[in-house]
Image (cartoon, rainbow, N blue to C red; front, side):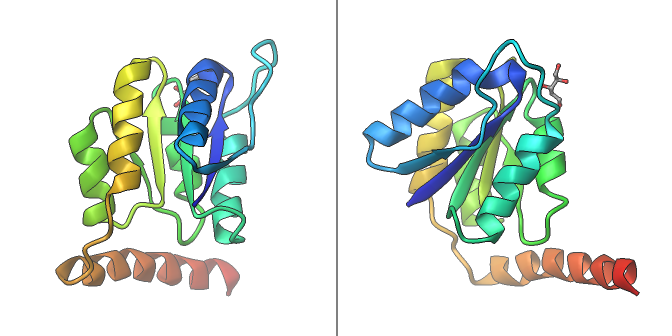
Length: 154
Ligand code: RB5
């Protein structure tokens, strides 16, 4: 599985820790930055890069990290087809795949510690979408995208 990583300046250390952690586990990890702690990176930039990498098929799933995980996930979720979920514990990380078919896990480097973040990504990547009754609900999210996408392009 190919995993796209993105973060802002607040989360470079945690991003690198998790990228190395998943690489050692055999995932093919792609770093979309940020890389330099001395350069401020506005979170919508890496959020968009990772979201577009998934939509272009360069990556299967993504990991996004900023201070809280909120701003970077809000940005990614503007891209149609992206379902980015901010999680601070493993239970939600598992359920957001099983029920919401999330394709990006987002976390806050100022919220979770490194070991908890590793447990969160483990839960996220080990889970599988359950389909069934959840499929209809995820499709309803896509319908909202189509409704407003069509409006924007009229
Ligand atoms: C950067 O200071 C901070 O605002 C950002 O990392 C994130 O927490 C925004 O949601």
